[in-house]
Image (tube, rainbow, N blue to C red; front, side, top):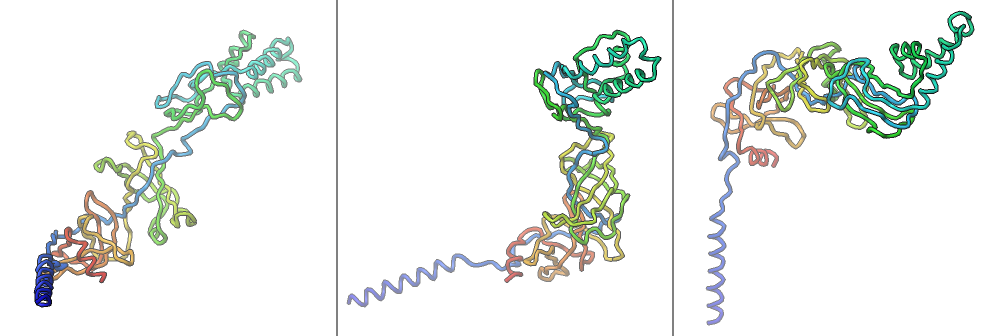
Length: 340
């Protein structure tokens, strides 16, 4: 009797397990997907790269201390302010500058400073020394007029632009070689980007490109390719690309990220289509592809080349036809099924 009861209990447990499994059916990979039609891209195809805005060294200057100073007496221009070439940014108190002015003042006080050839040569050397330290024509003219040397050393901007950074604060001591300030003309900038080997084909120096900020897709800046590096960066295994950016409108800022749109010049006549960016997947071989539904058939994985971005869409090229639809939802089950 006991054996019969145990057998009945075992049969009941097996039946319950079967009923539990029947409540979790596995959906087929082709179910619950959404598709959208692809569209032909108008205009020339564009390649899109990610780049970072940087200062143009030709319009950027770091001003270092040319002589020691006991303290920074005053700072007249601050980061973010506009500054003109030759405008005083800060004033230092420097005994060395006082010594240089005293030397010229002593020579000027000599009655034969302009007459005798030897003394005149010494005067020229003393003036050159002050100019190398940063003294202006106005300061030398003041010394010639008053014969009163001062220890106030005015540090001026070497170019017109925007003050980027101040080194010392007011009251700080300064040593030779210390950074005093940085200034840059932000109307001219660089954009630095990187190409994978093979992507540099068709690109040339001077080629015009479009620069689009990541935060404002509707804004487009004009740029030109300055240099395609003749080497591969050993750290990133990419080819550095340098682009000049016209920033006369002041819409771009250094260190910000941008999209670079470069015209694609190729002999291939295959059409370029626009598809939602979320439709593009990467295969196990790290290649880009899309699932295409054609003429009501099952989704088919087709390799494509991604050329660039246009808003929320991407430009793709491959074995595609007008009227094809790409899968935008339910991609993961399809991709899992394709890789099995």
